[in-house]
Length: 64
Image 1 (cartoon, rainbow, N blue to C red):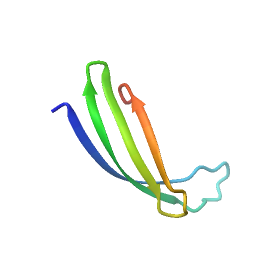
Image 2: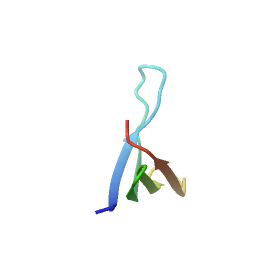
Image 3: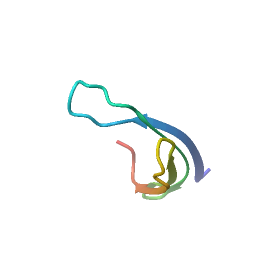
Image 4: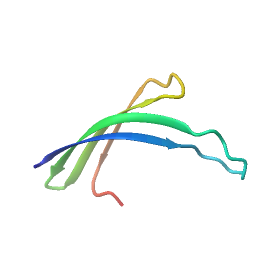
């Protein structure tokens, strides 16, 4: 039970005005290892709206 997996869909955008921008969508998969110092996460994400390629995300420690 030290290993977990994740699949996700993410949608959003950032803006500074009340004009609502178009939302961007991405999908991905990841693995989690519950280590003695807290979870270690490794995710691969891919943008669906443009040719952004694949991004690798690494994080460790508890989620806030």
